[in-house]
Length: 270
Length: 313
Image (cartoon, rainbow over all chains, first blue to last red):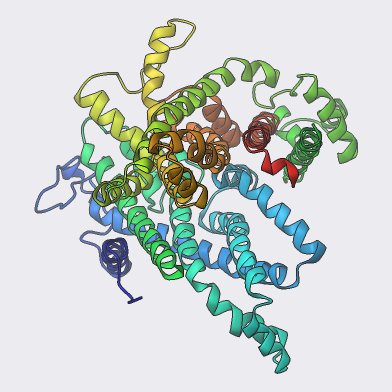
């Protein structure tokens, strides 16, 4: 079958690229300094001067969103890296070797994933306290089981296939078999998991900041902005709507990507 | 009967482990609760007396068993911040969250299942695309943002309700239920989208099976095949999914309660986390966790009733 990009991948990809560009630009340049308050320009509706309006302290909403996206992206990327790395290590060992350790770890992963990640994160954060690095650590650890599960299934499926057996007969080291021969084959299933994990990380961070137990105030975050904006829904609806739409667009773009990749995987298998 | 017994034993062990983990997690926290209760200027003698009173001089395991014994009997301990029994603090908040979760779950069931069956049974490329797109969009909106949108569109613009003006059920049941519709919907919308997607792909998957073709060739009508054969099989993964949904809905209600200022468990949990009032946090966490474990257990049991094949394994 020809490698045809489906519409999900196209739309999701374009959106994701645009948002990533906005995020990258936001690292170096924002229309106004995100913390600069314009006392004369509180609650300005969107205009040519302030593209998405200003908030209760007269700060430019677009600049704040770009800054907040930086925080969200940074956290989500770190969380996915932690979860993915340890997920691959644990999942590959369990799937390749099997045995009692595998049975116990699989059971443990199943139990952990039965609980909503948000609830677990809430509990751990209540003990360790909030802040950017605590969130990264907690979410990263909580995301390990979901990756480990997927990797484990793939490893268990391919470990006795012919090409692995031939590699073994040729005297290839186990390490090389696991990470040079098998790992690239898990990419088609790992990729959607990464994008879904990225989304979940964005969502969890936003929810926690929205609840006031995530990012601590001077730092901009889409969640805390949404929380602040809620009180001004009547006077300045654009503040809440623009911030919320930013979160929705981020999540939508990556979920479209993962849906597209999954569809492509399915059509390939047949 | 054997699977029932086995599942029940697993349930009890899981509950035990969950409570143990939660208790240990909250007992390794740095900081002494006596400082919180007595304030900074307490004498050493006072602190020691309180430590003995709270049982903090005992080893952790003894404290756990004490706590578990009390917990099972309905004594959840005493709040550090308010000096009130936790049970009393939960008594009027738990029903609110439980109702919110229940209403929202009912919305999910009543809307998602017919919609999922319909979209799974109609074959049309165009409908598939519309469906998939709508699903993706609705799944991408976080529950709290749906809540904010509802407050803005239905509350402020159309004036169907006043955001933040929570009506207590003790003053008016109808007012309470009417107000609860909005948060319940905010929680349900993404779950509905996910359930529809899940049910649809499950039905499509089953429709491609051999037994469907056999039934067709024997002259069964499409609707009979769908109702008698396909649905029974297609619902099995959905039941498990709904159990997960139940847990997600509950977490969602903690968040959405903040948007609609509903004084449920979520608010209490967050203020208690803020106050570092751990007996309250621990009690809420254990209740929520037990509820999730229980729902999963029920889903297992229902699955095995619906699908006899699972009992053979």
